[in-house]
Length: 137
Image (tube, rainbow, N blue to C red; front, side, top):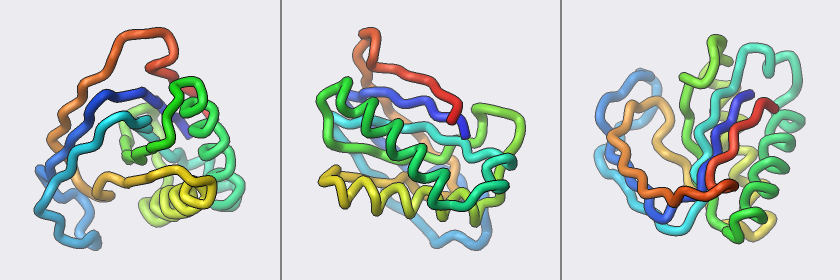
């Protein structure tokens, strides 16, 4: 799994193009302030493990990034362009859903961008050392 986490002053998205037929129709976007935006690529090799072990690694990393940025709001964004291999959409979505539950249980505010869509993005992010953290999990 590859993750690019960044602290954002403001983040917004609007659905542009659906790229997975089985996903629900989404026509509205959203805007968030003061959050950790996590660009996540679940890789084919992640499927060698169970969903819960992979989402636990992801959540532990996101909690660490959040502490470093004094932030309790996390946005999960599927971004299958951080590496060469991709897990199945079903496995990836399961990790996102379980990670969101675990974060909420730890009193984080959470959101997911629409899974299976290309999105128009608007990002306002400050430029300091721990505002952007890349990791392979």
